[in-house]
Image 1 (cartoon, rainbow, N blue to C red):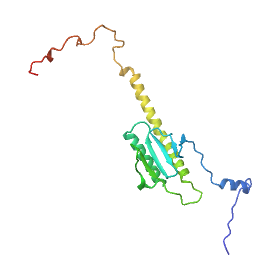
Image 2: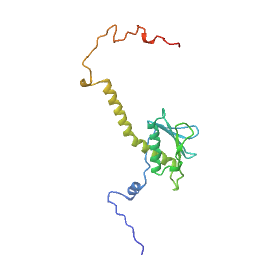
Image 3: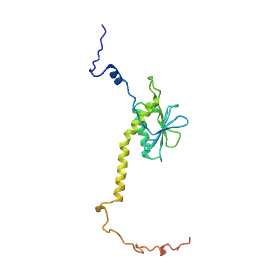
Image 4: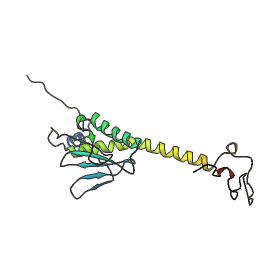
Length: 188
């Protein structure tokens, strides 16, 4: 005799309510993105890099926002390492792009029916950016602290002079006197 499967539900929930709970929910994400004329998706949310997803060629390309630096390269490297560990991109496809300071990778076609690879890339990119937000906030806080330290020093970091009165000539070198040590004594 085949086994019988029984599902016990609380009295308050009907079968329809239970079925509605079991349906997989698609996550809602919000990204600052644009679509190009040729159908590529550009994501501008990250502070250091711009991310372009080419859904036709199944490519992901990252570009520095302002200028190339070690920090930008580390961010690009971290992004593609994140995608590779999640199984979104093929690790052997990560390489430098055709444009200076760009890095790109390809993502495979999904084997399962109903799974959109582009949506998986978008969701993974969203999660990566969300993981980066604490780093952005910390760096901004430290920069503000350093600015405040130099702009508004504490009394122990200040000089005892207070306001220094203005004088017509300050310092020990008069700029109007010619430098006598620069005389030309040689045949040159």
